Image 1 (cartoon, rainbow, N blue to C red):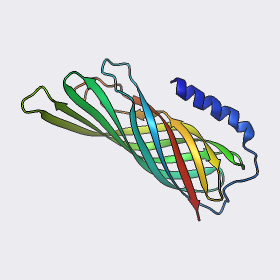
Image 2: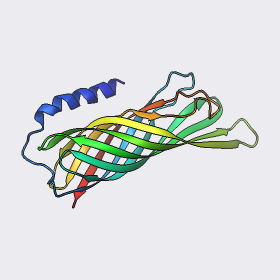
Image 3: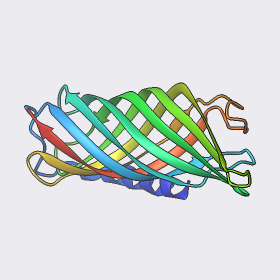
Image 4: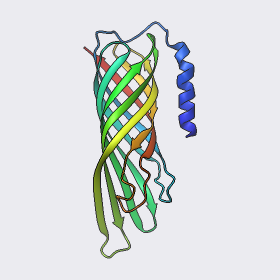
Length: 198
């Protein structure tokens, strides 16, 4: 949560610095972006997930300098600590992302919101059993992810960005045999690159 507050503060302060002298040209309508990140689950239940790692890829269309619509997917994996049992939760979201970008310069603050579905797979391996037993369950749930970020344009068609989001994963409360919040909240901090073309 402290990391999220730092990123949000940075985003607000950067709004005053967006009028530099370089920007992505309006005719460059298409954008592809790839990122990797570190994600922190926010849970109140006894079964807490360890922080996870993963990334996203998305492709989209810029209507103008301000508005863009992207479609993306990703993969994140989290360990759930249990004695003598190896358990993981893997999350694969597929969503449409509406993004609003500000400024005409090198630095572009933006905010976005993704809506779609997410595939959650819970895998459990019991090493105490002889032989070791492995089970898995999968469910598809509603997914929503509002967030914000900062993009730095370093060439005519490329930009680096850092962003965070509040991933709201509407899992069933006890669908995997353990209590999980609904929605389950995941907050990744992501770093990536965007490539623009026409």
